[in-house]
Length: 262
Image (cartoon, rainbow, N blue to C red; front, side, top):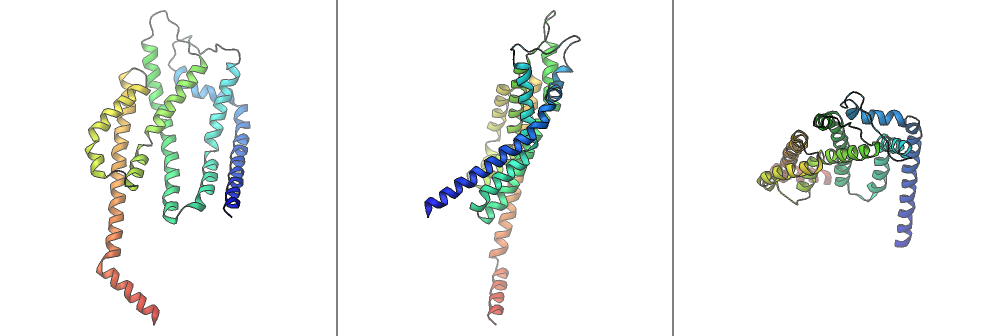
């Protein structure tokens, strides 16, 4: 009986993975046709800051083909992410309790939205500032010509850094709801979080003060947002518990029980 249940779960998992990969492939095909245009859009923050006559280069033979294809695959992943999340949800949901289902779905949606918001913030706000700083301090007579493969790696690392940073409220809420840490403890360690935010910013951003502040300050603010939302959730839960255990509610419950007997 147990073995049959395990095999059925494996079959279900395989089906979900095949659906995810199939839709990802369908999304990749049209993106591949516009791979060059997609890379141009991705490179726009740097292209706008290059001096007159500056350009990007490709040092490897196959780089001009593979790098735009990687960008097309990344775009296909972003486009098909709602379907991917739905397939993951459909596989996991049958094994969750009702209260876990109510928490898991908003958690998945909120996590995705915050991650994309972090990527958008990096693209529209952080990257232009970073490239402005880099090109400004380029020595006289030095042509700024970045390899497209290294540029893609740099941009993806920035996307990951800002995307994960914007997940801080979710991490705080989950830790509080799971009972791992209290609101009071989160407020107590606030100074250490601020120092840690600037250390993280110094590691994952270029060595300019502006970009480091652009990562560290949102991290600190989002930490405060997480504390605020978690405190509201705890307050609401306590109010519900208090109302359920109040004498009036008990009397109402007993009256409903007596009336049901009648």
